[in-house]
Image (cartoon, rainbow, N blue to C red; front, side, top):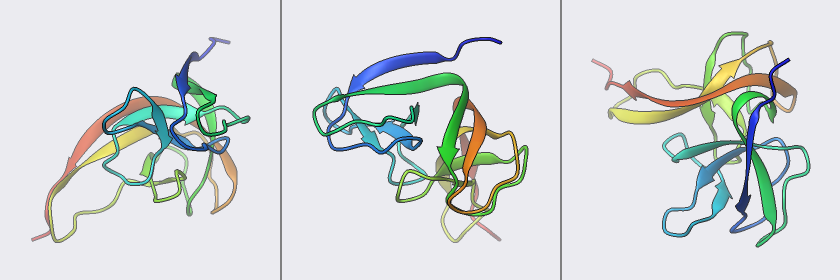
Length: 129
């Protein structure tokens, strides 16, 4: 088995375990992702971190994350407002570039801890017609 790429960051605020993590907007620090447009770092390990503590973030490879809704295997996921994994949204009124944190490896329902392949990227979601 290949080991994941894990890097430590200073947590700007408390970060729960198994949550999607993003860059802080103006500091060299990590925060719990709070939107699908947050600049993604990866997934916090199960221990999380206290504010100003060190959080280990899985940036590439297999990780476990809390599901924020129903997920199907193979779905691309982004963050909800609580750092949980949710499906990349369908086209809406306004176009947006959405952060993709990874690919779900098993089906899950809200609250489950689900394995994902962390592979950060972005996808353009056009406005609906």
